Length: 99
Image 1: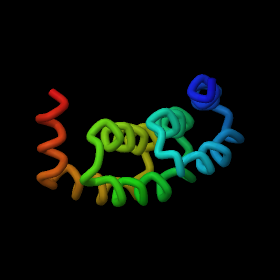
Image 2: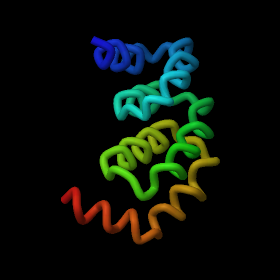
Image 3: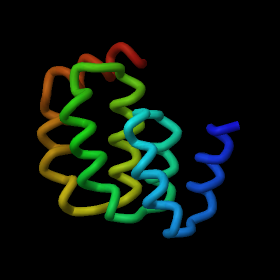
Image 4: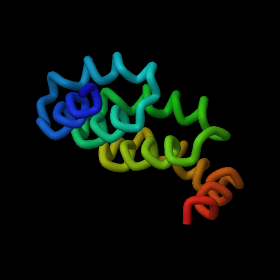
């Protein structure tokens, strides 16, 4: 049920959903990342970038959902960290494992 609620918040496009979803980031749920990406609110950028730093060597699908969310948000602040990640060996290794 919780996943459906999170997904619904993202699909709602209601900016009031950003704060509760930011509070749910501690779970590191891919659904929360997707929902924040769908909302497209730049308030989520810094929190998502912090998580990328923490999970760079972690689970590939988590990293991909984080990158996708940041891309959907479109905040220019995310470009340098995403470029660094794109040039890292971890990113290329993760891509090979998922393909």
